[in-house]
Amino acid sequence: MKETPRILLVIAPSFNECRRTAIEFDLDFDKVERMRFLHRVPQLRGWTHGTPFIALRRDRWPQDLDDTLHALQVKGQLRIANDKDLADLVKSDASLPALAMAGRLG
Image (cartoon, rainbow, N blue to C red; front, side, top):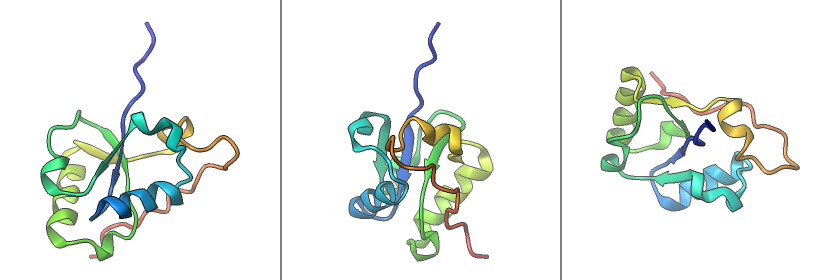
């Protein structure tokens, strides 16, 4: 049985910042059906355990969004996307981006 492709969450404080994040990761917008752009705290709830996400510049985010994402990471609900998660979503002529995502500043 063929495995269903996972959804990739693109998380940022606004829709435009989600779009910029996807562009910085060289994601292929022809495959947007496998991406979800989330920019509000309630949108982070209810995802399957271990759902991958990308995000940038979290040090500039509103505290509630960053705290909620951090809590969901600790719980294991969401996890930082790895190269395998991104491989099918990155433009074919681009190299995979390094997982240099902005983490929590503590």
